[in-house]
Image (cartoon, rainbow, N blue to C red):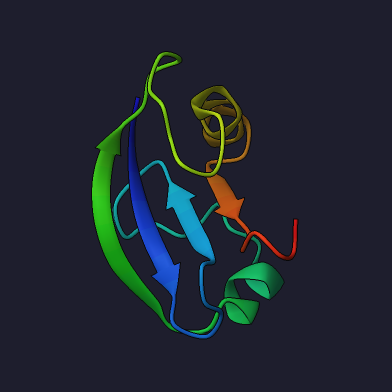
Length: 78
């Protein structure tokens, strides 16, 4: 599964994963506004076997399938 990752310039270590590049329509407006300005970081291919630093790929993939987005919070907020 392909995803596109953006970092919040307002909150350090907060990332938004979406399923379509530059398409934020699935992100609720209040949440999107709270993220502040976003900067594109990278495109990533996810699979259940892929190891990620902060979160399990399966959790991100499930959120992308069901919501169209995933928010990765900074470690201290989790």
